[in-house]
Length: 91
Image 1 (cartoon, rainbow, N blue to C red):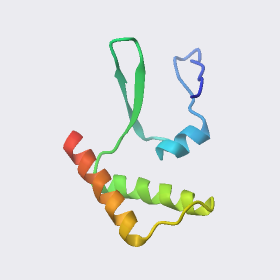
Image 2: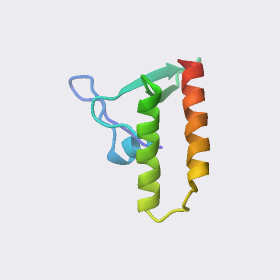
Image 3: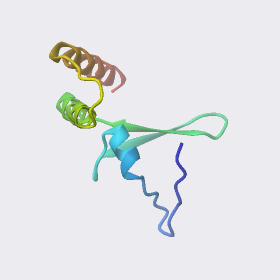
Image 4: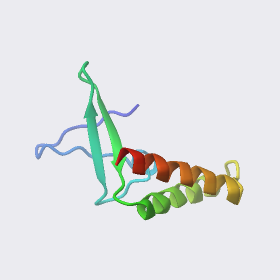
């Protein structure tokens, strides 16, 4: 959980860690969903499957650079295919 401050221009700055976690960078779009209890959910919006694949590959590269568990090519393909299918299903 992170706390952000709203600026005088009604802008919220997201930390680098959060941007990395969501595979977001400057210029990317996000969707805010609100629930009935006043909570909000921030989700990345990917405009096309190639964008998803690009973001996913960056996520894998960062994971490998941090020395975490390595994934096989097959595992990477499976996860990417699921992400693309999910994104296309939810438009």
